[in-house]
Length: 102
Image (tube, rainbow, N blue to C red; front, side):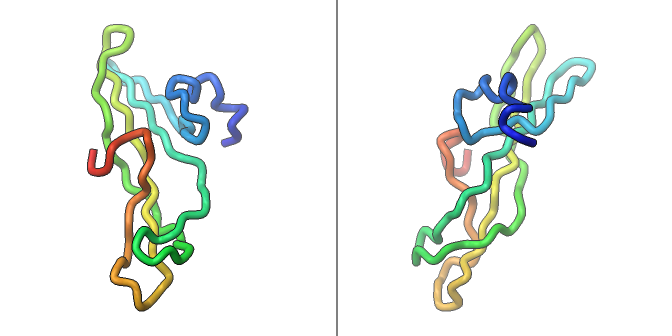
C-alpha cells in the first residue's frame, strides 16, 4: 500500500513511517492494524546489516473512540543477524510507536 492511499488513516498516528494496513469494525469495537515501512537495520550487537525474519503482531492499545474500544495491532518486524560469530540471532524492531516489550 502506498503512503498516499493510507494517508488519512496514517495521520492518526502522526508518525511518517507508520502505515495503517487495515481497519476492522466489529459489532462493539474497532481494530486498527499498523506496520512500519521497511528500512535497512543493523544488528544492535555487532552492527552487521540484518535481514527481515517476518513480523509478530503486538497489541498496543485498547482505547475508546466513538464510544467503542479500539485495539491497535502493530505488525512488528523481526530481524535476523547475518553474522555467524554474533551472539544475537534474532531481534525485534524498536520504534517510537511503543516502548520495547510494550
